[in-house]
Image (cartoon, rainbow, N blue to C red):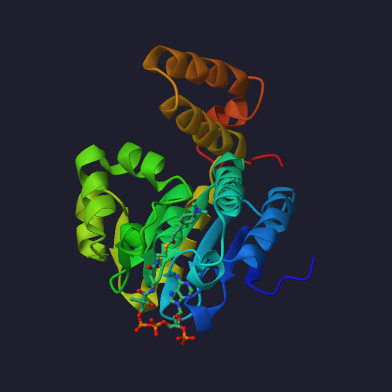
Length: 257
Ligand code: DAK
């Protein structure tokens, strides 16, 4: 596929995907979703990609769904646009590789929802987060009403969703919306360092941690624990032997594939 909006570079096992539509602050339109739907399985299938980083070009991460495109929608089109985006973002969550949001600037509405669908978030000190949908007379369409309460608690989530207030990176850190705040110039280096750390770990263990944690949070505790022990056991037919032997032999592990 010929990508116009998503610019991807791959190095050291890390794919950095930059949303690049800076003239509209990287607002999410149909072309974005078409490109994401092609890119996610493509990067998922590449052996040289262990971890993904998603960031934005210019002063925004993503300033929301494209209001110019949404303004013309009928009820049926709105519902369809919402379902499409929800499925695309869900496929990021289901990707068996970790995805880090490197939030460089505005992460508003659908942009905040994109960041929420990533596995965790590193923010520039200049980043701003918010769910301003109610300003426009709509509600989030890409599952912020579902992900945000699970991630930062119902009170914090409803505060953001109901007030439409934009918060800075430090406040987002306090709420647990982001995991780290760094200076703007340090954002991509910091995200890459974290991605490299993850890429150096046992790939089967990394994949299973993501899968079990993500499935577990959508189920009850006992079912989540059952998923964990099943995955734990399966690793003994995989890379666990090498990981533990390497520890005992005081050498770095040699992971397969
Ligand atoms: N969509 C389209 N264009 C946008 C945009 C957006 N979300 N955000 C910014 N732009 C465009 C501006 O229109 C402007 O275009 P020109 O006038 O130059 O042609 C250009 O980007 C630069 O923006 P500004 O001139 O406004 O830049 P400032 O630095 O002055 O302000 C800002 C930055 C981020 C504070 C401001 O641009 C802003 O408030 N933007 C809108 C933020 C927003 O409300 N985002 C949430 C959108 S609602 C659903 C599906 C999805 C959703 C809901 C329902 N269903 C299908 C049911 C999701 C909704 C949202 O995401």
